[in-house]
Image 1: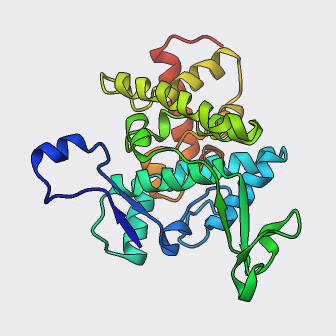
Image 2 (image 1 turned 90 degrees about the vertical axis):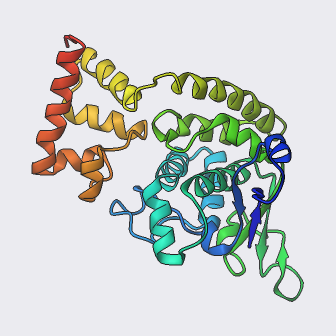
Length: 283
């Protein structure tokens, strides 16, 4: 099912009053089509976590599982990319969508999962319908399909805070970890405050934010601390910094994978040297 928030038939005056310019998608094919370099470094379709898997990661993150939080953030980072949308179009399309529709709809989906107050399990209710969980591992109950309930961010708030291509500007792990640690009554207010801050950063990025600024900041900090190239790669992966486009084309999804590859190790070393020289950094 597709809920359409864009209406090309309305008058220009009405269109000017409507902030939302994207679709909100909720069909199972869309909800379950996610990518994670943690689960599958080759990022093959169908190998990423489903929506139920995302609920599992959110629940485990709330129980203090740092790996689950990192995997949720990694899934956010990789699923929002144009390459994920293009893959979805090849597998389940083509649909009359643009990448921005995919981008904001996925954000809406993931933030609803992070903000959920409760879950229900398909198969636990009457006649196999949705019902409350019976254990602390609801993702293995019933038909192993979860749905959640709780507060949600408004779609226009997402549009004001994020722009397609923001993967390198946003610290997804920080957002996921706060939602995991926060009390239910503080999750939504915090996110609203953070989205306002991110919206201000978005405006600054429109005035010349470098595509690789965050990556280079991490490189400079690591070089100043005297870290080895291997440790720098680990730091880049920890902060969900994407590899170069050329690396991605060759299936290199993480910096550690690039370092372990004979061909791309030279590229990593070259990048570190360039940043070191450009910024006159001394270890």
